[in-house]
Image 1 (cartoon, each protein chain N blue to C red):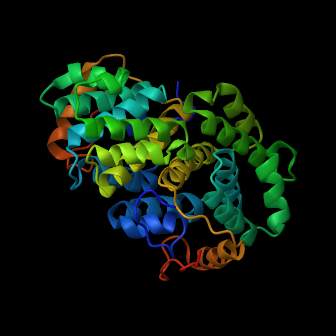
Image 2 (cartoon, rainbow over the protein chains, first blue to last red):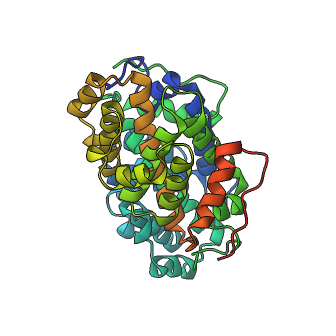
Length: 186
Length: 186
């Protein structure tokens, strides 16, 4: 039961976007730029970082949603997403992505947890300054989105196909798409 | 020393805004709407929430900056800010603001830390749904800004007048002001 009155057909952050459009606008734009804007990291790789951080923060809605968004945009699908979510250092991804995921893990614990060591490891694995910047900001942003979604006690769909339906839309149209968020019955 | 090359005249988040204007835009717009947009909470009250969360996250730049922004917009100035930052439950602020600060403290620990109890206490003290929403989102957003600033190892001004100079600009023009961020020598 949400802590404030939200449209019960709109789960997770979508109900909050409808409740407060003034804050929804920059929150959606940030997700679009970070997760789908021009970058040397693919949208699927960036969604893996979002999924891992949401998992560490224990946010069921964001983990389910971004896992589906990652799976829809990666040839290896949900098998890979599940492995990255649970144990990124052992997952079959590039050394560069592993190092960026390690930075994201540090950011999730706290900004000052990111040391020279994690950054040097990412650089040695081929990460650019822009990729290190974006990994930090994606992880930091999900420390916000996760707290926003759970801090207001929003609805979590129990039916996993709800996330798949959202993934189809996000993969096609992005976060700032022409189609309104899907209405999901709880 | 920042983890990526940033303009050494631009401390904290201002160097990151210059480095990546595409993400700066929604990040600045979010701060403007949340901290200065139309609200039944004053800008000073909202800056107190930002200051308290930044303090709990151990982010020296954001704590110094938002403490100065709060002090510039509250008749009781820095004395009150210092008391709220250290011990909000004992500070001479309204019961409503105390309850919203308690919600912010819970959000800082994690989204699922906000329970029915904290929300009921805020409501009993007169907080509206919109105020509860905004307290949660301000706290969540500073869990992002703080991690972004510290996760990239940005410059922290040692001279406290650097924050006062920023506060004059923010109080006059807002976060999306016509004047570029001040250049502060480290």
